[in-house]
Amino acid sequence: MFNKEDIRQIESRGSSAVSAQAQVELFKKGFPWMKIVAPATPGKGICVLDDEAAGKAVEYYENAEIAGKCKFVPASGAASRMFKDLFSGLDRLKEGEDVAEDSPAARFAANITRFAFYDEGLFGKPEDSAASRKSILSKTLTAEGLDYGSKPKGVLKFHKYADGEVRTAFAEHLVEAQNYMRNPDGSANIVVTISPEHKHLFEEAYRTVKEEYEKRYGVRYNITFTYQDKATDTIAVDKENQPFRTEDGRLLFRPAGHGALIYNLNNLTEELVSIKNIDNVANERFLPVTAKYKKVLLGKAVELRDKIFGYLRELDAVTGDTYISRPYPDIPGLNSVGSDKVYQTTKCQLLCNDIENFLLNELCIQMPQADDCKTRVMRLREKLNRPIRVCGMVKNQGEPGGGPFIIAEKDGSTSLQILEGAQINKDDIQATAALAAATHFNPVDIVCCLHNYKGESFDLLRYVDNEAGFISSKSYQGRELKALELPGLWNGSMSDWNTMFVEVPLETFNPVKVVLDLLRPAHQSE
Image (cartoon, rainbow, N blue to C red; front, side, top):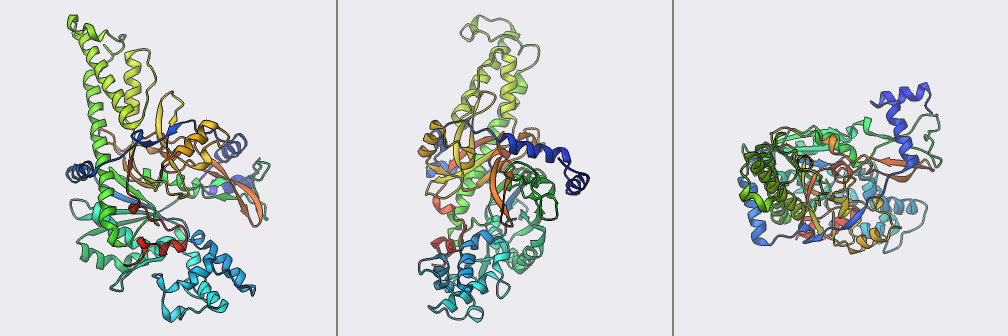
């Protein structure tokens, strides 16, 4: 399948021919559908907290002992998709035609003065004419002006304040980090995943505000820019599942989606990590509610951590090869048992009962029946001793993206998972019924605990479900191709984690997927 030049190309990217061949085979056999048991809903998979419970979670976080904290911000994508409709409008205007009055391009041009990046010296005053619209679009998207069509979202000006301050999306993440991710020494650690070609833009955006923000908020920022490893790119294939080749005969590789960022996450040394996409920020007047519920998620995460660590230490204390291999004892006959060994076995059995009830009631993990006590303990220890994530969920308002479900695992257990639409079999009646009954949406508002109960960092790559990727249709220079998406960062890459879903208010979810989203109240000054 691969010639010598192909192999040199593959190896130059840090990969191997064996890996590339395995990816081609995945295109041929496809990925299995997720077996959905039910949607995760309030009371059955989604924890809904009243004000008192939310306050206790915040307090728990603020008093917890944590071995380092970090805010992790995926920001490697360019803003081209954010301006897709504007590019289409500009092409139409360049051809001498006008755009429809209700089109995104016309609405953008008519509201140009409401955007934080508006500058009268550059754009002039908008007029109701095709020429004016063409000028506004061109100066926004191309090197004639701001060149926003080729820049990453993180460095675009999102918000303008009454005092004249203008902030990029990246700057708003700096403001958030000092509020809810500050370490005891006054520092705030932030890791931002970017594309190498955009590093200078982010460094400039940081230099512009660093000194002012550190003085204003009394914080010291520790910023790390990291890249998605080229070795995680996946090979593309044609419609016949043969390696896709460019006009010069070379293989085509594509970024494998946000799932590749599990490698970046795995390099972090901090125990507690908050994940939030670069475009999900709001005007600072929303920060009180945003920070409160981020602290709620952080509190629930460390509370879950402490509960699980306690169980693991109890298992260490009551289990051993000398007794856990015995069959289950008759618990009602405990009083008549005189053997310390049997008593210890019974104590272990009671602990296992407690753990199984906890897993079912708190994490929707239904454990399969075990044949003996030793197997039972082994399975419970494996379920407990895993990375932890607590994911905020908002009520579904029709936004595109994944959602929370209870699924059946290969080992006979159940678990909470975030599924994308591409992972759900639309021809399966039970799956489509679960999809229709879903009540919540994944806003990518996640808190992770990355250390085990002995204080060691988990190897996150061991907890990836490699069968949870998916295949998408793309094009290259007008030619159709198939692209392979690695298991998503919050989908298959975190599949084998202990997961809790917590409802958070809609006010905490303010993404900017298209430029007109910046006209929403969360992105405008009062």
